Image (cartoon, rainbow, N blue to C red):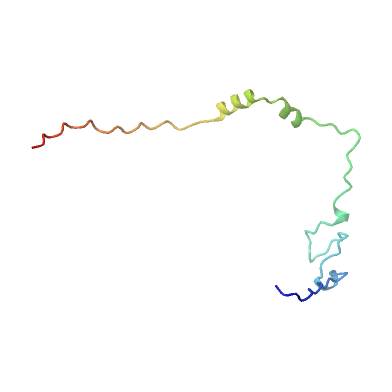
Length: 97
């Protein structure tokens, strides 16, 4: 590697002028119709009267190794085993002279 100083990359402070992208604030444009910006992401508020119908974390905590093994045995379907081939019985060897 050389000891020459590395040049700093040139970064435009406002690249939208060059790339013709919409601004990062998320204003819709016909050029990028599927753009999701800051203004189109929603407020992230949950209503005060919202209630969960299920609790998956509780289900996970209630699972034990035995219940998981039982469910696995119910779901596991194996194909029938093939018979192991058997070698034919050896024939008596001919007497050596």
